[in-house]
Length: 263
Ligand SMILES: C[S@@+](CC[C@H](N)C(=O)[O-])C[C@H]1O[C@@H](n2cnc3c(N)ncnc32)[C@H](O)[C@@H]1O
Image (cartoon, rainbow, N blue to C red; front, side):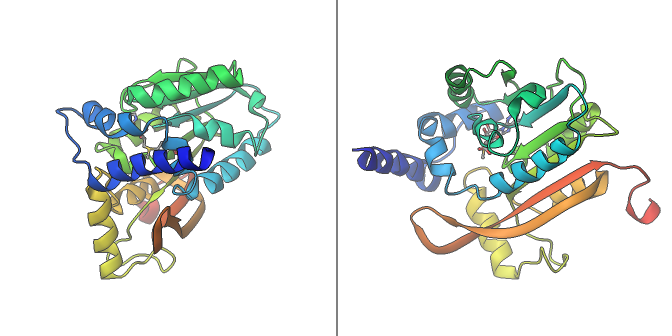
C-alpha cells in the first residue's frame, strides 16, 4: 500500500518538475505555485535527488562539534523548505547543542509542512519563519551556522541573500555552508570543470523550473568567504536512468584577511 502511495506522490512531483509551467507575478507566488501541489510529497522524492544535503550537514556538524564548548550555537537554514535538514542534522549531532534553529522559507505550503514536523518531533528550539531570506535577520542577531541547501540556485538576488547572511554570521566562529546543483565556468578548476554539453544541458534543464545553475553563485561565495571545505560530485535522478546531475558542497568562514589577489 505504501509502495502505491509513494509512487503516486512521486508521479505528482515528476509532473510538476517536468511538465508544469511556473506562473505567478512575484517570486513567492511562483514558488508557491511550484511547490504547493508537491509539498506533502517533497521529502520522499528529494531524499533521492538532493544528494549533497547529507554531506553538507555532516561537514557542518563536524564544525559545530568543534565549537561544542561554546554556549548558544545558532543555526539559520535559509530556504529551509520542509525542515528536513533539521531531521537529518540530528543524525550527525545533538540538536540540543543549538540554542536556536531558524528554518526560513518564503513558500507558505513548505513552511506548513515544516511547522507540522517541528510539532511532531517536539523540537522546542526550532522556529519556522515564513520570510524572504533577503530580508530575514535572526532575533539572536548572530548565527554560528548558516546553510543554503539547494536554495541559492532558486534565489534570484543571490548576492543580497549572501550579503544578508554575512551581516549576522558570527565573524569569528561562523560557518556558511551551501550544497546545490551547479554548472562550471567555461574555464574552471579541474575538480569543478564541465564540458560544453554538460554546462548547456543542465543549465537549460533546471532553468525550466526557475533554478539557475550558473557558476556565479559559487564565485560569489569564493570571493566573499574563505573556503574551508569543498566537494564536487554527481547524483542520480529518481525514475531517470543513466543521467547524473552535478552538485557541490561548499563550506566557508568569514575572511580573516583580504580577498584573493589582494583586490
Ligand atoms: C530546492 S528547495 C530546497 C529546500 C531545502 N533546503 C532542502 O534542502 O530540501 C529551495 C527552497 O528555497 C526556497 N526559497 C527560494 N527563494 C527564497 C527566498 N527568497 N527566501 C526564502 N526562501 C526561498 C524555496 O521556497 C524552497 O523551499
